[in-house]
Length: 386
Ligand SMILES: *Cc1c(COP(=O)(O)O)cnc(C)c1O
Image (cartoon, rainbow, N blue to C red; front, top):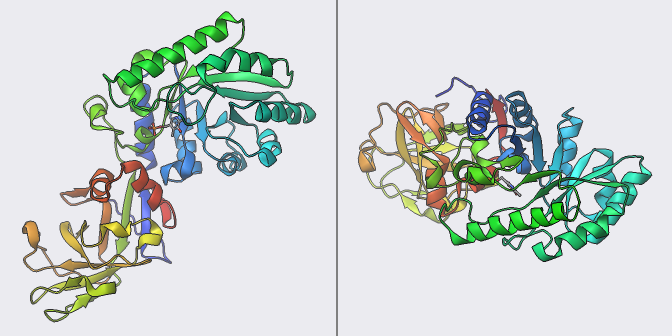
């Protein structure tokens, strides 16, 4: 466990290991072919890890471009002084076009209306409106349909204010190496890019791979790959685990704020869904709750690590706090080495001694994916960079 003390004003925090971010960037870059650029997805505050600090670390480690989901996210990076190209992966609302132009944030374009307004506003500002063309090859989320791509480009290209800096698609099943759906999307993408070239138009950087794609399908790397989850040291699927070594970046910790030893039968938390089962059980309170991203669905169904040993979470998780039950002779052989005291560090994600709880473990208990787990912990907890 790191020796981080956490913030002064709250006994709860997330630790972000920027060294691990850089090592993950380098590990992922080793998966890339020569001259393939790396675009880093730092949307959702870098999957809950803190966008500005993570983006700076990624660029220092050799990343080329950044990707965000909202205008605000792009503005935040620019206001921190980041100058790398930034692509917005989602539709930009029309009223925010001038902000995109002012901050040099490239939109993903797939509608005429937006493309023309963006070109107009860029020209009015005396700029070239760089954009990436999004193609929907099968995910049915955003993008121009492959059959319409050439017409769409012809329709936009008369506009002098615009420059196509990239052409991309997104895979729905990149983690499944042998899937027919993946092959179909890849083929449609290649055909669409070829059609654009054959029409005598520039594609800009061609890109389609996300983290699993760049690891498992090197042939689809083209000019650039868009990494997200791998940068944060997490695997998108079991299929990538054996191929590249990644280090988790986020740990989530709090400190015990209160300890009691209630009598047998005493209830814990709303609804008293946990009852003290035997004598000597310590009930300890930790000031982290569902408003911090600790899903209430984990109530009575997750472990934490305290003093190097696992303990069970007990009772319903509250908005800002939860309780744990440290039993003298715990379930599944969790035997505390010492009594829990106020101020002891409690680890929700991360390691302590020989124990580790991963975002994957928590994701499985929640019936979701590691992406959602880290995004959620980014909501309110203060980030401590190490
Ligand atoms: C988030 C995102 C990525 C990154 O995906 P990971 O699975 O996290 O690597 C790539 N491309 C697009 C369009 C995205 O929205």
